[in-house]
Length: 75
Image (cartoon, rainbow, N blue to C red; front, side):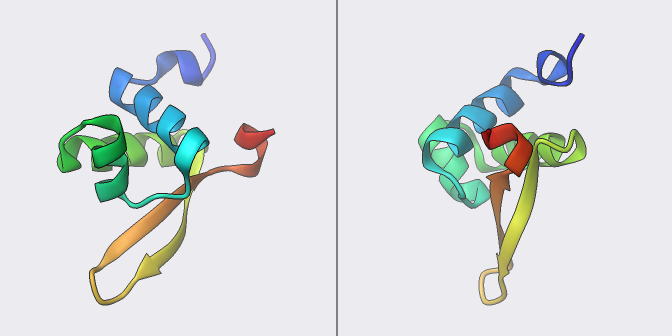
């Protein structure tokens, strides 16, 4: 089973959202994917743990991070 096949449904959805609209914050992933913000954060953390997404920057004022798919994933 490949890494992408072992992902939860939320993580798969977040991956599609990032592929189509990324890079995005967890709040933006939640809005685009119609997920709760906590589920979007969990999904992004799962993608990051699997090496499929990475935090590309952080916004200090809002303490929010922005995620994008890894280079290998976009190819």
